[in-house]
Image (cartoon, rainbow, N blue to C red):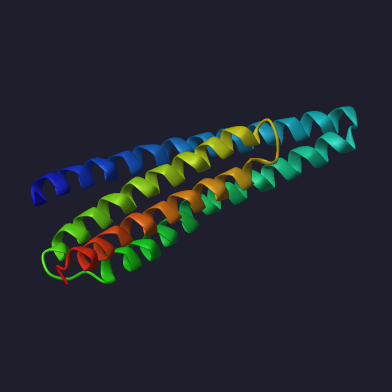
Length: 159
């Protein structure tokens, strides 16, 4: 059981690295596109275009900061509450393994939400809220799935 969990966790770690690298490249390309858009708008004298490009660039930077600084902190906090609380008896090992896998899947889902928000930032500036919404959904799902073990243990009388 533990070998399978370790193998799956290693695969999810590698997927996180690949998606994070792609997200960084996409973010840098999006920033370059906004700089070029702002430069072009400045060249033709469009103040609105420059302001729109600057606002989109700031939004892209915030999505990148959220993806690389906020998401790992959210996953660590959620993992600490999901794995550590309320486990007893034979559910301790199973709960820890399930909590780790759920946290890894939630981290990937949050990172994919940030990538979708970043690609949407090239078109509109409202995509940062979508990244936060998907991160919240993944975090709540991770915590709810982590509570299933202790609730089942108390219900079945294992604790």
